[in-house]
Length: 54
Image: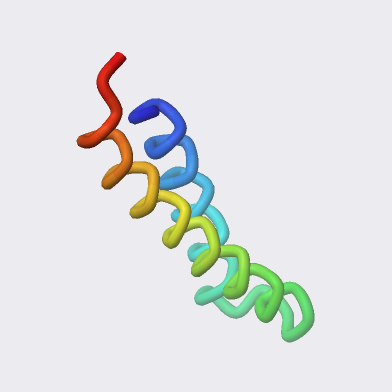
């Protein structure tokens, strides 16, 4: 579960880089949305990893 959280963290960093660096208007909007979705999934998976016992 923590592996997926780290993967979504990396995805959110990449999307945030493209979204906040001003690549273009259309792709920046999509990257910002993907950034916040990936951060939300990352936080959810981190919280769930503390409660799930393998």
